[in-house]
Length: 198
Image 1 (cartoon, rainbow, N blue to C red):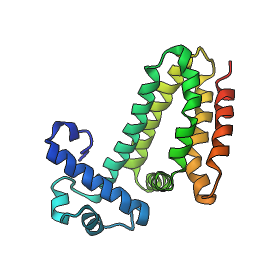
Image 2: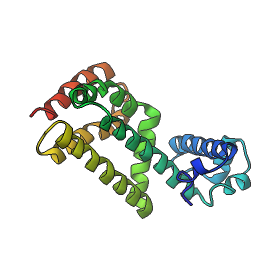
Image 3: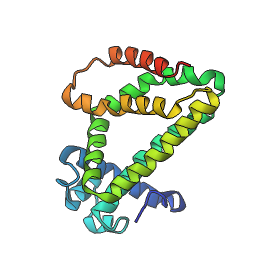
Image 4: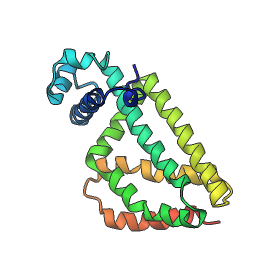
């Protein structure tokens, strides 16, 4: 059951409960991993009974799927924001948002969740398909943005470089948790500008 697509159609109380469960589950998964976390632990963290959770999600896999959908939907929303910007501001805004991208992708909590999702995708074909479907949407939209608004050729290659830069930050945080975010952001800005050159 994909709850995230149904949240907006439900009562505010139900929406709040679903968010409460997903937030609790996300925290547990970051601490103990998807497979190290049981429903009882999620229920304890959410402050409700396991039976109550089953009223909203019929399995732990359904909770995992909902978390993945929530994460990917947030990325797609950010992508749509770029489409609303005037052409003359787009490149500047992409560079300006480098700091936010570095901060988000080096946050220990976000990094751990990202790596856990990727690991789960290797074990779970449904999660792998969700990630691939999301990647196609975001990659296609970003490439279209570069072609239509910035008039750039080889848009797909440029997108792959940018995505690789930001996606790799979760791994860097695992290996080097004390990395210099300010210094990294400075060079990310240079890298983004280089990728977006005609």
